[in-house]
Figure 1 (tube, rainbow, N blue to C red):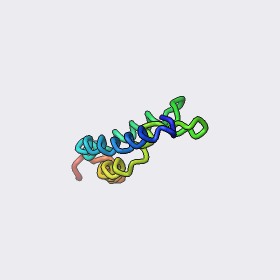
Figure 2: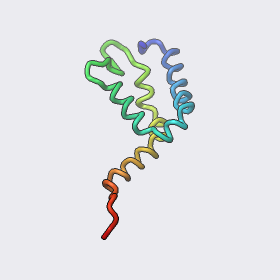
Figure 3: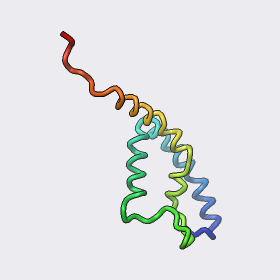
Length: 96
C-alpha cells in the first residue's frame, strides 16, 4: 500500500488487532513457535521489505510486526520455553 492511501492504512491498522484477537486462543497455547515462523517468513532473504520509504510503500506485515497485542499474547509460551530451556534435559535414569 502507498503512504498516500490513508483509508487503506487505517483499515488495515484496525483489522490487524481484530485478527489477532480472533487468533488469541491459538496464540496463547502455541504463540512462540508461530511468531518465530512468521518473523522468519517476513524477514527472509530476498523477500520484500515491510517498509520502503524510498518508494512510499508499507506492507500489511508492518502492522502485525509492530502490534503489541501479538507480543502480549505470545508472551506466556515464550516465557515457558525459556524456563524449560534453562532446566536442561530431563533425566530418565533413577538415582542410585
